[in-house]
Amino acid sequence: MTKKDFQLIADVLKPHAKSHTAQAMALDFAVALEKANARFNKKVFLSACGLPYVDLGNGRELHIIEGE
Image (cartoon, rainbow, N blue to C red; front, side):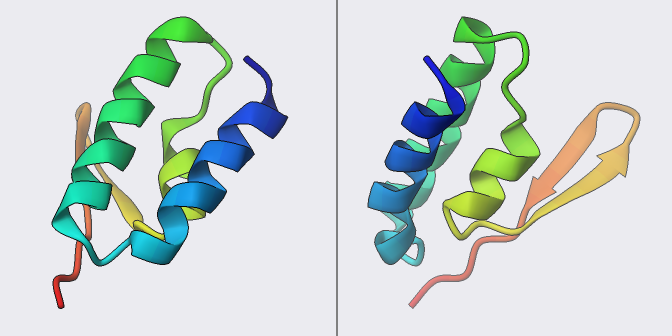
């Protein structure tokens, strides 16, 4: 898959970013796409999906998710 494909997925999920289902799907996609492409950037993808991302260091990460 290419950056164009990743952007397409993010564009579909972004309008629904406040939905818990879309948030879970974005995180699941991020994990799967990271496995499929070594150059995949989870932080960029989640931001494109409308889910701000914070790297806490030591391999820990936080995805700031706002509910409706």
